[in-house]
Image 1: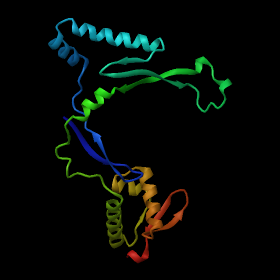
Image 2 (image 1 turned 30 degrees about the vertical axis):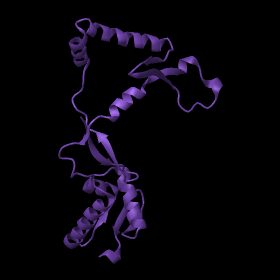
Image 3 (image 1 turned 45 degrees about the vertical axis):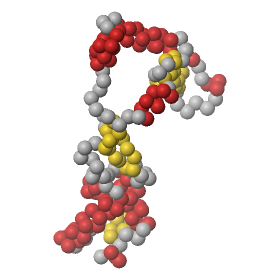
Image 4 (image 1 turned 135 degrees about the vertical axis):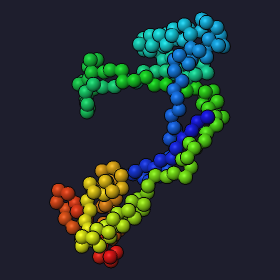
Amino acid sequence: MIKYKLLKTQLTDTVYPQQVESESFTNADMEAALKKRFGSIAPAVLGEIAEIISAKLADGKTVAIDGLGTFSIRLGMKKNNVTEFQNVHTKDVHIAGVRFNACKELRNALDRANIQIQPGDALKREKTTDDRWVMLYDHMLQNLQRKGYATTNATSYKLLTGCTDYTARKELEQFAADGRLQLLTARRVKIYILDKKLL
């Protein structure tokens, strides 16, 4: 069974599912499963398969295994921002990783997998911009009553709401654009106050 939880992107505020990792199926688990199906020689074959795939990739080949998928190498550059072909030498090229593209049969088999939300996660959701605004508004009103003034900046907003620096800056700018906050000072650190019409 595949379990997932729901998250929200910080840029677009859209919901997406993320797999909840369960216990890993290790090489030892694979060896035990193969031994159970095919006898004691099977685990030794598993090690040989990995060595053969590695050797063939090193030979510059793409390795296609029926029922599983295709392995190929991914090349990268050791130097950044090279714009001219003549500035690239063999020593600048390296293996950046190995791609695996699952075959159609494997993808079709996974289409039939049971997918369920992680227990306890069905009612949980990430905080939205509106949730964070309510937290900020309540906090600033309380400060006005206690201290007689209330300001905020990206750092204090981040600490209050638990969002990232980027989200804090963008949301405060948006609240100001919407007329909920006023920009008090735009020096190195932008400081905001509540718009008077909200008091």
